[in-house]
Amino acid sequence: MTGNKAVAIGRPRAFDEDKALGRALEVFWRKGYEGASIADLTAAMGINPPSLYAAFGNKEALFCRALDRYEAEHEASWNEALSAPTAYEAVKHLLMYSAASLGDKRRPPGCLMVQAALCGGKECDAVKKELDKRRDASFRLIRERLKRARREGDLPENTDPASLARYIATVLHGMAVQAAGGASRKELERVAATALRAWPE
Amino acid sequence: MTGNKAVAIGRPRAFDEDKALGRALEVFWRKGYEGASIADLTAAMGINPPSLYAAFGNKEALFCRALDRYEAEHEASWNEALSAPTAYEAVKHLLMYSAASLGDKRRPPGCLMVQAALCGGKECDAVKKELDKRRDASFRLIRERLKRARREGDLPENTDPASLARYIATVLHGMAVQAAGGASRKELERVAATALRAWPE
DNA sequence: GTAATTATTTAGCGTTCGTTACATATGTAT
DNA sequence: ATACATATGTAACGAACGCTAAATAATTAC
Image 1 (cartoon, rainbow over the protein chains, first blue to last red):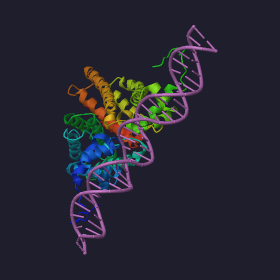
Image 2 (image 1 turned 120 degrees about the horizontal axis):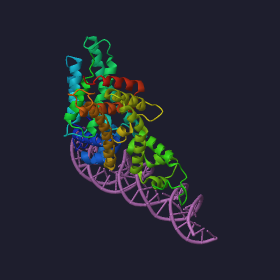
Image 3 (image 1 turned 180 degrees about the horizontal axis):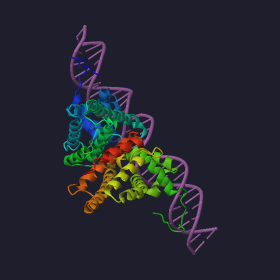
Image 4 (image 1 turned 120 degrees about the vertical axis):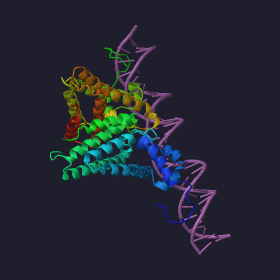
């Protein structure tokens, strides 16, 4: 919004927008969309409500910015995992990276995309849909990688890439639920290893 | 609370407590614990707030009663599934029953145990813990069935019942997330079938 | 300097939250 | 009939919700 211009006119922002967004992300991650109040957010961000609204618009827009940030933090690892030479390795790396990430005790437990708003009152219907859309985008990333694998003869001909991708996405979301309940990285890695045994052929 | 005594003194309750609880369950199921307001609940139950508080205590107690009801609705099917002669059949029936149940369009989508409060503000910490406890009870049901299977030689000796059970529970919770996003029974059954391919040996 | 522009603080807006006081209605016990 | 006990509807409580008006502070443009 307010420019990356070299010099902006008017009173300059007194807080670091990126850092504040990071704090907001942590709050949404721990408390969910509904559970995170403006008071929670402003306290964590170190600002007052008017500064939040001036910089980010409103609660929903701030949440979407936090979603963008969250995805950006994982994008590199996802791309690296999915670019493995074989589909099996790609999915294995994806599952193992997710186990490590979801079980990382230095950050909030679980997955923002899953737990921020699985359901809720009608005032968060839009957020629910947005999360569903982004989870579906992750599914499609996996599916496209598996489609490529089948074209390359890296998957049996009787294997449906979409079904296998749906299964992988399901395991990932299940791991997110386990993590939300406090599962450790080790436990999640065991789940991931077991899940990989369903690999075709 | 107020007795199942043949005749109770005082003004009799004007609403069907069981039916009202069923309506409350549906509201919590669709909106989650935080998202379900007392106004939502009383409207669905056809009563006023004082009647709700007199009959159920408060929002949290009502939610726990709804949890009991929810579990009771699935208990018979779980027991039936887990009493199958082999562990593989038991888990297969469990997954297939869950696919049908989670994808049933006549009821709210997803699983109350998963989506009612994966995270939230501190006022629903107790509810979060209660849900986690009950999910863990489901996990232990599966684990005990698999332990029995290993004692009976129905599982390979190098298979850890706890790890396999954790995997099954993870798939079930993942299916619940898919269902919350609108997945159909057919899709969930495909996921279940794929998940079963991870079965040991 | 003065004007213009933007950010910050304080304080509070209207609404909804979970919950309850109170008067009244409806039943049994005697 | 009177006393007692419980349920109900109305109405409202204090607190928290998301959000904003208004005054003030800090910067650039001229």
